[in-house]
Image (cartoon, rainbow, N blue to C red; front, side, top):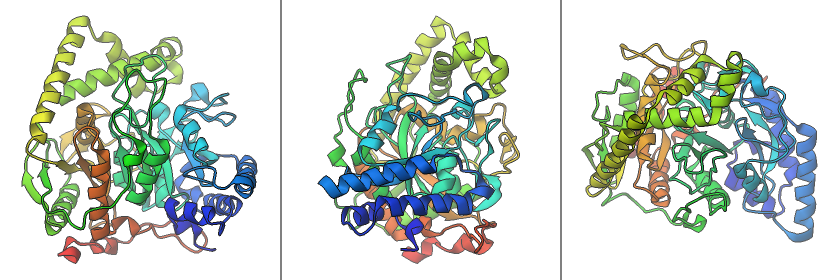
Length: 492
């Protein structure tokens, strides 16, 4: 088969479990694809080709003896470089861990291995996953397959670029302040930030941490659901277990969206600046949802205290996880991380108590919103993919960025709510750059959210538009003609 790189994870696994494709063949095609297209985008930064082929051979041997090894039998996959893979260089994008080789897998990697995944390497990240632009002093910058001079987003930017470039169909990202959703928007793929604990993410130093999530990224919603069935479920390491079973993911999608109530906000009710092309993408999505029968009205969750909840909680998490390193070796850590850690150390008891109260009020407002609406639709990012030589955008639509997080506020505000949120492709700008939207549901309604997304995906097909890659593997700028390739009028 010569088109394996275009197939979804669901299709590849089906072929392998039917005995029509071996894991060795799939893995060889995956490694060949990395060699062919990775150079210009720098998405994959560590490759274990020999080990991957050995693991694929073992998957084939076990299949011959006893059948499929799991829900993701034989599927080749690189892992995010902030996730520890036993025996494989895992750097966190930091000079402090440039040669680090862990002796055990993180829980998400262990679950994917148990589901049958063949680990092949690591995808690039910003240092310690901080910020939504993927660059670091160990491996350099990851760029966008649709425009190789532009950012791929972050911190799961290496994975997003690999998905868009057809290096692999599925992978695990993580998301504290948009690290799944912004790169998904930038690279024309889907990315899910699940409800708390649905995919367990145990904290080594804070068992009660709630802001960060592990979530899948893929080119199809069906693959997102496949991942959730493979990786969700209870974990002994968690203090509380999520009230959602892995078997809930999938099932039949509705024929249309009649009866679904969607609130939409262009500025989150807070005057958040958003570039015009991203607002145009939101308008396209609204038109699609309306054409599918949904009721769409301008409405927003009251997010007036979300900035505080996000900012203080993130600072606590950074000081908890990286405070010792910053205190002992600040010269090895980028300034944005130092700033976040120092903010955490500066929080006093009164501030923490007031932030906890603010988080409680925020949840009351979330519940009030969902008494009237089923979903919340917002811009996928505030900006288009920007110049990859920048650390972060200096302004958004003329509004100056005071910190490296300001341009990510569209994602951070939703992180503060804890809601399950899916980033979805929303077509292309007039300049040919990908755009996206975010769709949020109430806590633990992740399966319903994904079923609605499948209806939207079927009506649009935005993610099927691949970046233009020349015969010699060179990735070139996407043509502006793509801007109208999937206009909402196509579904009216």
